[in-house]
Length: 244
Ligand code: 1GP
Image (cartoon, rainbow, N blue to C red; front, side, top):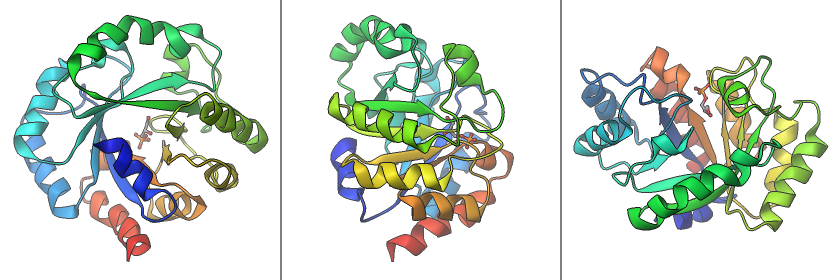
């Protein structure tokens, strides 16, 4: 079960999640990529993206055939659900005010999810401005929280916890110019009892160390590894420093 694992991390251990965008995954490379993930001890594989050109089922079954790393859906839409995964982040876009992303898509997905056997992880998903407009912001028709407004982010995360969500994901968006700032992560990580996931624009050792130091329990990296697989080892070593 993934949620008990996430809860066990809170404030004690750090985890590293590799985000695979199904549309960018390449059938010829996925096996060797996953060998690298296994060798480096990637904790979780997130699968999701903004669009859906490829069958998510196919990508997940492929991943599952090459590795035992748990696969967690991070769906951009109800078209990205698959019972072949282990769990799904049921994202409520609490930084936005678009009803479709707060409850509408959940209603569409609920009967499928009930049947799927997937572990459901209710997640307060918060977009933080990362220096440019991102696909999520455009596709969801919502505005991110300004990066210099940590108080708004904190109150949003607190409301998410009070509403019964089980984890908070702060995302600067895929390929963000600037990751979520430390002075936004720290107050949230200390004020709420939920595991905190941080992603978007994490490229360097400094970026990932900053996120963990500020209180991230899980850091998600997508683009940086997509662009250069060798970056994985450089980044994940920062997790190991915290965990020893
Ligand atoms: C985006 O948090 C993820 O939703 C990861 O972002 O691709 O920039 O690492 P990157």
